Image (tube, rainbow over the protein chains, first blue to last red):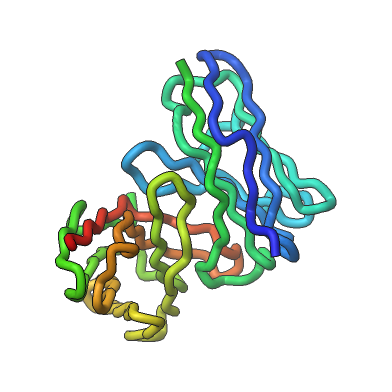
Length: 115
Length: 114
């Protein structure tokens, strides 16, 4: 069984640029969530995708957007990068959106540095 | 605003001793409370969860206790091992119909001394 994989693992951008991060969900999981984790803090929910549609969003501006593809993989796009966007971006998958427990399967993250 | 938080940022424990990590929450509407472990350079790993209508749940070497009266959650690790060294996060799932949109606390670092 393949776990959640994310790419790239590390990247450096400059302020104002755009970035796309990618995630492949664990086999059999149709729900993907994205979290932002600043250094020394807990992950913060960005949004969740289920059946290729956004299924809930945290307190993040519209320049954070995403996609989910028919194979359940997902992308996180961030436009007009700001210095505060520097963080570890975590993708997590789960079997179904309606499941109300707390078990998510996280990837190892994409470390974004904005200069 | 409402949040999930932790009392102790760092916990140092002797190998073989028991560890207790505490967490306070403020939202009584949460349905599940969860503990995650995050090792350096890795994503969070699910440890155990507890439903809001339960007081205690046990797993392998771990026990989670939920005190709804004082809005307190704790994780007990029995016979702490070097591999338990990590940052531990409590989290809550607030929306029964929304599915797995977690609110995390700030984390506690556990250091296991040999």
